[in-house]
Length: 434
Image (cartoon, rainbow, N blue to C red; front, side, top):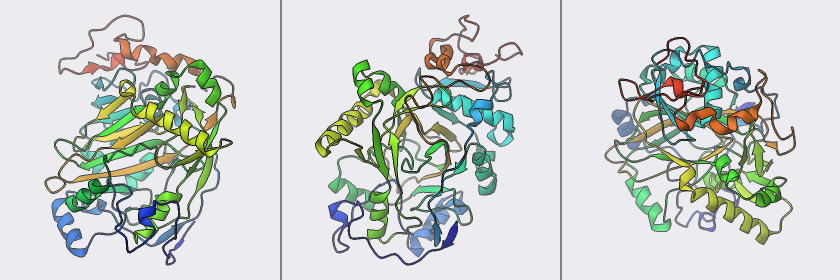
C-alpha cells in the first residue's frame, strides 16, 4: 500500500551511530556509495548533462510503503529445464570468474528471453551465484516498465525505504555517484575503508533472492563489487562448528539505515522492519547450506548473551570477509547487466575511483523470494520439482573442472577466446552447441 508521506522528525537514536544523533554534529555518510537526499539544483543540472540516462537519476518522491505481509512464492528455477535449451542457445559463450562462483556470459540478449529462458536463468544464477551479461544496451534502453516486469518474473519487487528511485517505478534503487569527492574525502577522514559487506535488505521477512544490477555508467578502472560465497564459507567450518550454528537465529533490522536517513534530513518511505532469520539457511533449488548474516543489518543472535553474540558474529563475519579463496571480484563494464543470488552471497562495493572524472551510475532491482529456510525445516535436502535431487548440484556438475556434462574433457575455448557453453551446468551438447 502506498500513501502520501508525512513529515518525519529526526529520530533521537534509531540504531544510528553516536556521531549521527545530533544534527549540529558532522554527519558521516552511512554508505558512501549512495546518496540519501536530493542533490542541489546545480548538481542535478550537471548530472543530467553528464549522463546518458537522465531518466534514471535518483528521485526522492514523497510516498509511503506499509510493511509487506508474507506472500506465497514459487522459485522459477524449480520449473526450469535442467538442460537450459532456451537460455544456452548456439553461439552463447562464457568465462568463469572463479571456478565455483561467477560467470560472464556472451551472446545472450536478455531483452529477448522467453519466460522459459528466464526460468533457466534463475537456475543458472542458483548454480553459479553471480552471472554477468555484456553488451546489453538494448535491455538497458528498454525502459523502467520493461525492466520491472522482467524482474517481477523472479519474485515480488522490493521497494527501497530510503535513497533515490525512479518516479512511478518504486522497484528501482538508484546508485549514482558523480562529483562527490568532497563527501568521499570526509568519509575517509573517519573511516578506514568503504567496504560494507551485506545482503540487500536482509531485514525483510522474505529477503531478495534474485537481484539485478544494470550498469549505466562506470569508471574505466575501479568501482568494482566484491562477492563472497557464503555457502563455501559454511563448508569450510568444521562439522562440530556447523552443528553448533545450524539451529541459531539472528535478528536483521533496518533501524540503523532508517535512523541515519532521518537524522541526515533524507527521505524515509517505510518504518523500520525487523525479522528473525536462521543463521544458516538452505537454498530451495540447490540444497546448499550457507551462512546468512551481514555487517549492515544483523544486530545479534537470538538466545545468546551480548558478549557471546558479538564474538560469534565477529568470527563469522571475519571468516567470510577474509576468505579471499571463496570470493569473486566483478569488474564493471558499461552496458552490462549483472544478476546475483542474494541467498548465498555477500557483496560490497569499492570506492577507489575519482567521481569527478567518471560517474558510477547503476540501478538495482531486487526480487523477493522465500522466507529463509532453516536446517532441518525441509529435511537435509530439498528435491527439485523436475525429479532431480538438489544434492547433485553441490559439486557444480563438473563446472569447475573443464568437463562437459557427458564426462568428456573439452578444450574449453572457442575461436573468440571464450569458453563454450558445453561447460556450463547441464548445457545440451547434442544440438550443435560449440
